[in-house]
Image (tube, rainbow, N blue to C red):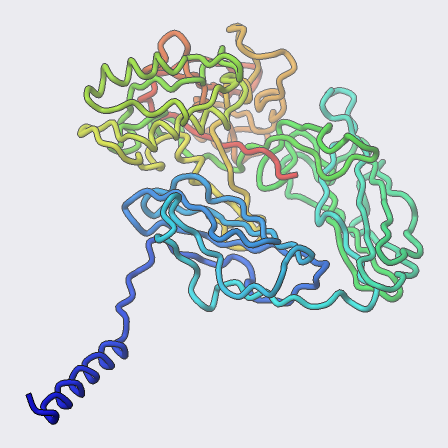
Length: 518
């Protein structure tokens, strides 16, 4: 072979190799996508903090369980931990602590399939994280420990409404003293409520001023009315301003996009004054499924919202506790094998031992764990049952933000809704399954109780809208016939509400509830 021929061959190889390198890569569509709900590009003082949110949507017909990788020191993720089925979404929240960040954050966040570090995606470039750390302000900079504060009225007629005082901490994070720090309140606190001291005066660098808000007997807004928080604005003669929205609530108050029916005024009260907001539970402002016959089944076989599935879910009947599960897992497994033959029952690790009569969140998680594992059919197959087809799935899908958008699009997103347990819905109807002082919807949301026989049940209550009238599913299974019966609450005005059981394949109404965000 001549030297010239060899040179030609080498030259041809180089051309082909270079052409291959310069060839554009063929990008495949991401399996899950991101939508930024907040700004993702900003400067952050090293002593500052920020909250970033994305909506993550599974675009694949395969169910995926995601986790953040790598974990970035100074950024704490939450949300998006449950399996996502086809076109299901979750809200990923990132809490950014500037004092813990080691450098600027450019790109990410990256979510990977659990157990598969090679299947990972991050947002499009324009929505990726772009956090630039800046030095601490060389001037006074005040900030509050909370942006909103929820308190309970002091109502001696209701033991849970104790009206505990709660604190607001104003801290000077700057390097100079903050002078003449005062506050103004618009609108004024409701009658009987007070705040002390009258001002914060001078706050040294790194020091704090603690103000105590003490509720009276009057809420910020009448039950059922739109929230009317008192906004407290803090500012010094040489500082920035910062605000805290104060809501004093009672039963029936509209708070965090729901009607308050349960209050935990002991939350955050290991010190005096209490820190943070009250705990409790709210019912959604609207139904997530209509009344029978246009409602939704308790459990679905995967063939629409009206085709039920008779299965035993462990740990969610009225006699189940966190210590002793009822029904036990073995009963579920036996029933499963009898119905679905060669299919393997869902593993015990998927289920919790719930307080079945009172913990609807735990109950709903168990129900969803079962139907996220198998579609009972026919045909029976492993997979995720469409959430829209059954009661707990409807609640899991529901989100609403602080601006009233559903699903969430702007502002604070309220998710984590679930089907309430039977004792969260009403008092005991003689079945001896509910505690006497259990806070519930019937006792504490009288303004929503309507007439099921009315031509328009949804407007038949004293509030005139969003009424509870008729049969609503609970997440509590019936202990005697757990495979095909569950408890429902019959809502009705005039003391006629009652608890009873119904076949799981009946299309009843659903009103979701959620725990308050502290």
